[in-house]
Every structure is written in C-alpha cells, then in structure tokens.
Length: 322
Image (cartoon, rainbow, N blue to C red):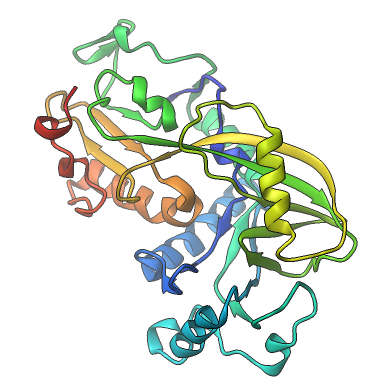
C-alpha cells in the first residue's frame, strides 16, 4: 500500500468533524442514518484501540429552534418510532434553556458525536506509514502506463483527491463540485461547554472556553485563504445564539468536494479497470465515511455491488464527458 499526499487543502482537517444524525432544515433523518451510526460506532472506537489514541467523542447537539414551524416539526417527529434514537423528547427545561438565545425552545439530538480531526488524521497517517508507505508528493497521472506507475506494477489505484479530482484526466468527466468553507475558533466565557448549540451555525466545545464555529459555503471560490467576509459571516450567525462578546482565536479555510446529489462518488473507471475513485463525501464526510469505506472494501475484494446512489455509473461519460 502506497499513499501519495501532496499536503494541499486537507478539508478533512479543517472540518469540525461533527456527526449529526438529523438534517435540521426539515427535521429529517440523515441519509442511511441507521447504517451509518452502526458503522461509525464500530470504526472510530476500533481505530482508537488500534492506535492507542482518543479522538471520537459523543456529544449532545442542542438545536435552538429558529421559528414556531421548526418547533412544531420537532414536536411532531419526536414521537415517531424511526426518530426515537435521534430525538430526545422536549421538556420544560428545553423550552426554557438559558445557555443560548431562546425564542422558540430547543431540542436535543441523540447519537451525535464528533471526531477530533487533527488527532484522527495524525493517527491514520501514522498507521498507514507503519503498514505501508506514504509519499509526500503529488501523484503524476502521466506516469500511469497500463498496470505500472513510474515503472512499478500495481494492482489498483484509488483516487481520493478531494476537489483536486477536477484535474484528474481519468475522472474529470464526473460532475465534481467544490464548496469553499471557513471556520473560526472563538473564546467565550458564557457559551455552554457540555453540549453543542446550533442555529444558523454549529458551536462545538473544544475545552478551556474555546469553541469551533462554522461554517460558510462559497460556491464561487477555490481559494484556501481566509477572508474578512467569512469571519464576519460566521460572527453574524453566532449572534443568533449569544449576544455576549466573543474573541476570535483562529480562522481556517478549506474546499469541500461534493456531488450534485450530495451522495459521494465511488466506483471503477468505465474503461481503465484498475482505476477507482472514492471521493466527494461533502459536509457529512465523518458521518458517512465509515459505512461507505466498508462497502467500498467489500466491492473491491468480494465484488459486492455498490449502493446505486453513490456508484459513479449514475454519471455516464456520454452525458458528463468532456
């Protein structure tokens, strides 16, 4: 196993690593959520044991309702059987929660968690280096010749390049999209540190009165530079949760790889049978990656079928070719 890493972007590190089983816009369950939760609860703790590290943490997400309609949606769905594992039935304490600006009450999300991304990626990289090889250099597409790369034989090449997959001459027919986003680290003496409050943005406790906050969505930029506009936009969203002053400690930017239907891109090149792609997991990457990785391995080793919603065969070269 050889991994090529050019060290650019790393949106997986910039991300907060939040794992939220609900989609708040309509108070729906996330895609394949039961399967995703089962897979990630096996994968992340298992990797912690293998690497003798800690990076996976359960957390309560408290959704501060934005309006009466949102509150009514929650009250309706919290009694449905398929939502029991993900919604805590509201109480008077939730209605009167004082840890954030509260105009319409709040609801608590169950089975939520987060991955401390810097620790996770450091441990993964160390594990790969121990069991294979990491080359800190860009991959050169021109050096692929049949079943050899740079003169050395290989079995399969899997491209997981993030938004840089746009430059991949083998898979650039796919409608890969890029969404630039920025996050802040803020300091506050009044924001709750025992749960993640959410409205317009997420606020994730990091300890010692520090919080990661995000994020922005910019479809017109491929810049990895932080901006004053991004900072202002996030602070404007924070003001929906607290009127107390906050201190900006840090700011980061990254570019998320996404697909038009937000379902990821996995599969085999239609012509070059030893080339594969696993990419475009988007904003739900830490939630869906354990499940999709497991299914991708089954596909590679056992010939199992990929889920049709992520299989790149849904994007044919006839319609998407360049």
